[in-house]
Image 1: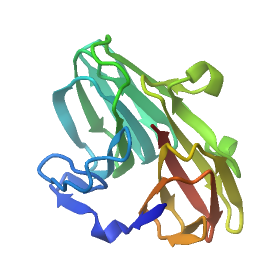
Image 2: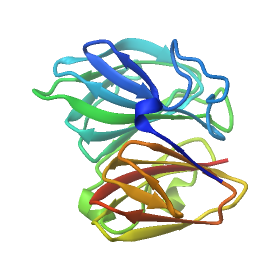
Image 3: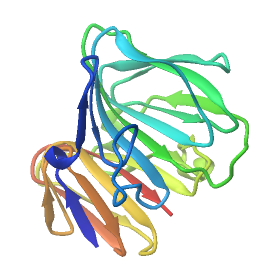
Length: 232
């Protein structure tokens, strides 16, 4: 099953400093039909204005992955961590028993990012945070795993869920294939460029919800950068 969810049909909020689209129910947006996709709970497409951001606020028992598309995000949390994550790179926060954090765009330009939340397999573990550079050239024409519940095997940032977050950068006419378990759930977005997924076309930033597929083939109809979550 493949369900293409057009970007223009996603819930939209413009707060001035934050212009965002919600792929799933979030904040004041509630749709019983879009409460998540398997263990994937949140996928927000955020544009954060220069010198603005999310002030300190709490979370618990959630795996929060930030994929920065342009600009950069600067993180600070109650564990004492600080860090700047630039375009193409990723940060992961395991909220665990509780953490307070702030995320600001301190750059002179807008920052665009995907904010992805995945439910953990177990609640009540200590919080954690980390970030890593992922050069875009390393994922040219292939999937690179960015975050994983099996980080040593996948050489990725650790998350506490049976899930993977991955990305690929394709030139027009290229394709990548992913072998999936048909009982799992995949959700895929092209940050830029039109794509075709198992024969179904999707525009840039459309959501593509997938399940019951053993082979997922993504063809680039334009130059494209793709991010996908595979979760229970």
